[in-house]
Length: 391
Image (cartoon, rainbow, N blue to C red; front, side, top):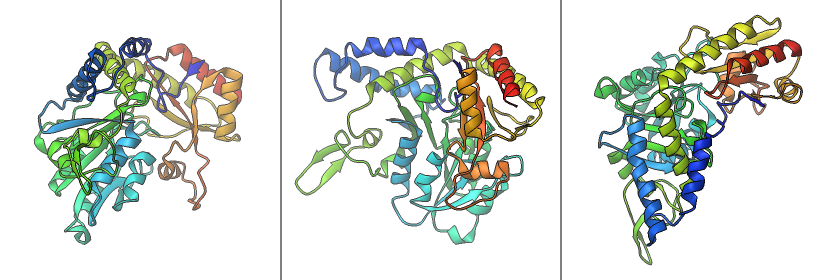
C-alpha cells in the first residue's frame, strides 16, 4: 500500500510499537497503587510531562501540561473550562478543523477571521473583532490552527499571539498538523508572542493508541475547572461537596491511557533524533514533486497557493468524477490510500472550492494527498501515474 493519508493519521513507528509492548509487561495503576509496576508506570507518566514541555519549548514554569485523548478531547476540556461563564468572546477562523470550532461555538460568542480567495487568513480580522466595542467587557480568547489540515498553510501564530495579547486576549493553538512536520515553540521572540495554550494529538506524530496533550498557563488552568469529572481530580469528597485538586490532575479524571503516553514519548524521541530540518527537507522535496506532476495532468485542479509556506498537504480534484469515487478507484485499482470529502473543515472547503453554501448539506469536497516521512519519490510517481490513468 502507498499511504498518503498522513494528515488524518500517521502510521506508527515500529520502535513505538516495540516500546509500548515492552512497557506493558510491567503495566500497573498510575499514581494510586503500590508495588514495582505501579511505581514504574507512575514514574514514566509523570516524568513525561517535562519531556513534552521541552519538545515544544515550554520549559518556562508558567506552563503546565496535562494528557488528553487527542486534540478533540483537549479542545473540549479547554472550552468547557475557559468558557463556563457568560461573557466570553472567542475569535476563531474559517480555516479551523471542527475540533477547534464546535467546542467554542457551543459555549461562547464566536467571531471568525475570514480567509482570502487563496485560503490564507485575513490577519486584520483578529484585531477588528477583538476591538469591537460590543465585546469590551468580555473575557477574550483567540483560537487558531498552526497548520491547516486542508491546504497545509502554516499560520504565523506568534504574530497572531502578539495581536491577541495587545487586545487583552489569550491565544489557543491547534497543533495537530504541525507536530510531526515542523519544530514548534510555545515561546516567541518576545513575551507578547508567547503561546498561552497548545493542543495536539499523538496519532498525528507516528504513535497509535490515541493520546495527546495540552500545554497551558498554570494560573489560568488553576482558576477554572473542566466539565469532566471523576477520580484523580479531587483532594477529598464529602457527603455534600468536593474539594478539587489543581492542574494538571484537575484535567485528568479517570484512569490514564498509559500506552498512548509511552508511544507519544517514544515518537517524540525519534522525531528529535531525526531532526526537523531533515524531515522538512524530505517532505518538501516530495511535495514539490507532487505539485509539479499533478499540475501537468489535464482536468486536475490543485487548490492552495504554491508559493506559500506549507506542510506536505495537497488538496485537488479531478473533473468529471466525485472525490469519493476517485478515492475508491485509487485505492482499489492502484492501492493508494488518501482522503476525500471536506476533511472536518466544511466552511473552509466551501470557500476554497467556491461552492454555494446550502444549509445542512455536506460539501462534496476534494481529494487530499498528505505526505509523511514514510513516503518516497516512488510513492509520488505512483500517485501521479494513477491520477493520470484516472483522468
